[in-house]
Amino acid sequence: MIRLLLLTLFSLPLLAEQATPDRPNVVLILADDLGPGMLGHEGQGIVKTPHIDRLASEGISFSNYYGNPYCAPARWSLLTGMHNGRKGSGSHTPGGQLMKFDRQKLGPKEWDAAFMKVQQRAKPVPENEVFLAQVAQQAGYRTGQFGKLDIGFLTWHSLLTRHGWDDYEGYYDHQRAHGFFPPYLWRNGEKFELPGNDRIDCGKMSENGTDPVGSGGKTYSQDVFLDGMLKFLRENRDRRFFLYHPTQLPHGPVAVTRLHPDYADRKDLTLSEKKYATMVRSLDDTVGRLMQELKALGLDERTVVFFSSDNGHETYYQNREGQLPKRIWRSGKLADGSKSNLEDKKWRTSNEGDVFDGAGGRAGLKWCAFQGGINCPMIVRWPGKIAPGERTDLLASHYDFMPTLADLAGVEAPPKKDGVSYLPTLLGKEQKSFQEKVFVKSSGPMGKSVLITREGWKLIELKDGSFQLYQILKDPKEYHNVAKEHPEVVQRLVKIFKRELESDRPDLAGS
Image 1 (spheres, rainbow, N blue to C red):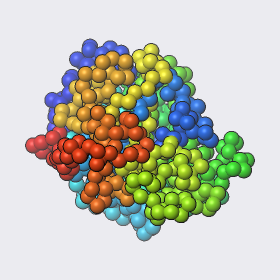
Image 2: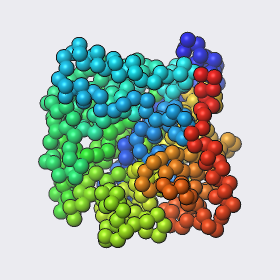
Image 3: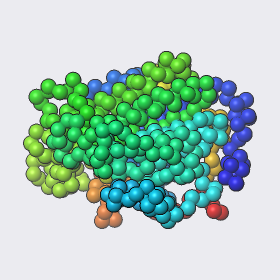
Image 4: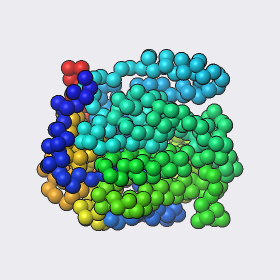
């Protein structure tokens, strides 16, 4: 039934093959909690990211690209092609269940029975819902996902296959993914153990990052995922594929098996800052290994590589004063002890105790509706197709990736989704269809939900129900709230804002 429905939604693969004979392989690497300021080409002065910087120098970078303020809503938007202000957005399953079963020390049969009960209680997926990987499948691509699996919190084999994944490897539960030394992971429905890892919490470290290097276990999850992805590339070198890597890196608490030599002996960094720098470097090394393998397999020029992050920067590391910068802003204070506000004294990583300035001077960080929480990197490389060293301020978001993938794969995008393909911009062609607005729903302490328009207006709803207005293309770091100067703009955008918030999903009409 589902397969028949998909055939009615998309163009036939044969027709797509005839229309786009040079359809590329697609690789999407999604970092976790990585702000733009952590990348060398964006001005990072401590941590080197040569391989990600190479993507930028040989491709195109977006400066006006948006995720969500935190993990699960960002992944939901990416994988459904819808903004997360729609009804029913977010994870449909509870987190922490597998660790709960493990702590109860259930036998294999009891463990499986408990897991099955959770699955049976989950909200069913509408038959007419189309997910990202299914778009690639319909074009004849082999799909693979490695890392922090699926939309958010708990998933399982039948749900992953329903979402369109032919192959996968990783964490079923995102709460387990807060540790980098899991005793087991899942590969295509089968549980497999990781040697030397025995902690139920997957070796989760303390939030201040002061645990000794190597604490938690022996087998590092990112190493497992890299091996799995390299194997996937080799096995599918003779067919088209879509590889999606939702890595844990550099989400904290910080944990590494060893310090990178560039940072191990630095006197100006704390232990936790050294570990965080090593995690970002490990992410960059993963990008480098994947690029190296594509080259070795002769797939370099036949593969378009996307690099982004789910949300903005987060600070899971202790500074030289023994403070966690994120705890300072959550206390409502600035580093000097004065009270912060959402006007002239916004919290910024650039001057509030973050040695890396991971948000690049933007206001706020993860969980915030300001740019530090939602303005994400997006870099795209496709040799011979995308001009090197380009930069664009085109408005785009995670939910625009689905129609872009459909264009690359040569099939029609699923109808009535919120996204708009930005492939013309990637190829240096005229962008005739535009994303007129990006809507982001949030509930954090620094702003609730957000509406951003193609003209550069950004409307932020605060917790007290009032609104701020910024001219984001002129004032990307949000120093000047211009709501009083432009009340007519506020009035117009508030109407759109209220229309979008908790709106019905047009792609599921009739379900």
